[in-house]
Figure (cartoon, rainbow, N blue to C red):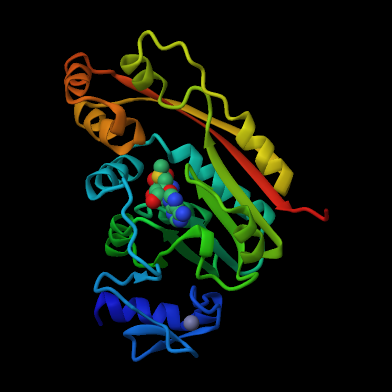
Length: 288
Ligand SMILES: C[S@@+](CC[C@H](N)C(=O)[O-])C[C@H]1O[C@@H](n2cnc3c(N)ncnc32)[C@H](O)[C@@H]1O
Ligand SMILES: [Zn+2]
């Protein structure tokens, strides 16, 4: 069976979790080829197995090379291992029965894949959504145990209360949509950079720049929308190779503002270790 047919079978099993982004009606898998609603809006499965549910094509600055580097770093280094273990523990602590976890802004899918593996919970369905097709395409190509969707978080093709966990890692959020999609007892796990995130790389690039990054606004916004039930800090410093440095330079939106000359300087002087500093906010729907 092809990748496309395998994904279509998986989606068929869980089609009640999705909805049409145009008319909000239920959708059904048709002939293991497309997803259609009662009003005949139709979305084809790509050969890699993902479904593009965007209503118009969107050009994003996140390209193929950035996702290739992100995948290399997230999958092949230990920089995010602690994060994956912590999120898996959070899921195991707060959820017991069947889990449907949505990765909102999943990029190339490695976080969701690793977290699902580490959670080791039976009856877990993973759904990854991102507006950047290049990310989702890569996710679908490499990871076959989840449903991968190209879609906009502002109009997510997910049914009401279809998920009991939403993870949102280093990505923008849409809290109104998160609340609609989340079941009553569900949790949101938002991961944001702490002040030492990518410290050595930023210091090498901005030696005179004394600006300190603050995530207070993001935390406050989250607390206004959800009842904060946990706020954790995950930090690790790992040594990195030359090849890993290359991927680190290219995986981050930091790269968009770096001139080629500065990148060359960075390669020449190198950095031999990197700090990953992340905060994890866990929220529940509040009664307010
Ligand atoms: C910094 S990347 C993080 C990706 C992934 N979570 C990771 O950590 O590798 C931010 C992601 O948010 C996605 N994104 C931005 N706006 C979005 C939207 N409106 N709907 C869905 N995804 C969005 C981008 O396409 C990008 O993949
Ligand atoms: Zn429709």
